[in-house]
Length: 69
Image 1 (cartoon, one colour):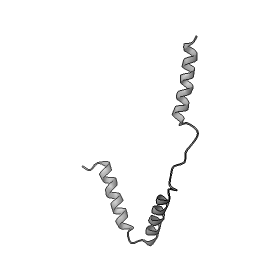
Image 2 (spheres, one colour):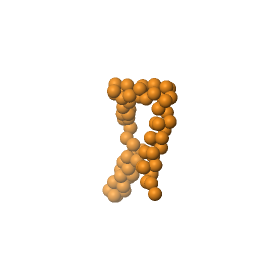
Image 3 (cartoon, helix red, strand yellow):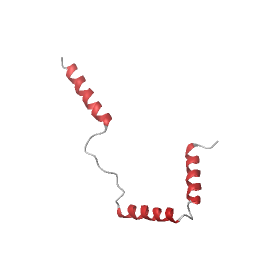
């Protein structure tokens, strides 16, 4: 039985083979490659902490307040 990773890799190869003759797909792939070489494809930096860290800080401050009593 194939693992999920192997199935995904097989699917990607099949799709790439199927789209290898499609000119629109080739242009899109070239555009993506150009964007990567220019460094534009970076993930944005967010100033807010992740949601779980907000909750963790809030609950730790509540616990600290309750333990001081």
